[in-house]
Image (cartoon, rainbow, N blue to C red; front, side):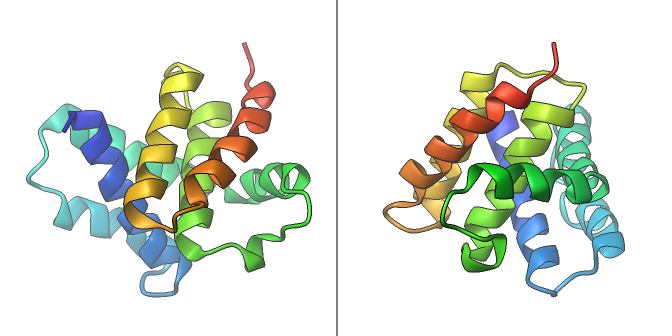
Length: 137
């Protein structure tokens, strides 16, 4: 498993805990600091950026997802799918890292296949394909 995929998995877990109320948004960055100390410095920095960046920008991320999710509300989505979509939207639209959009989408699909339902990969692919158009040059 690549280091960036591992960072995304850890970030997903943290965002899921935050979304389900097991962690406050403020505590999620602290959680990442204490829990993911097995990562090398660069991978940890990427993981922490995903968690903090998603949380900081969530008020802007949720309307983007909602606008593209026809016949779906955020509340109706599973917590795992919602966390994946938020993290990938952060990475596509707001992150300074500017990883290639196909790589971000592929990673999100793989996370959905591993952690969510049978149909989640297709659902996430469809939404993120529309959201990638929001990316600033």
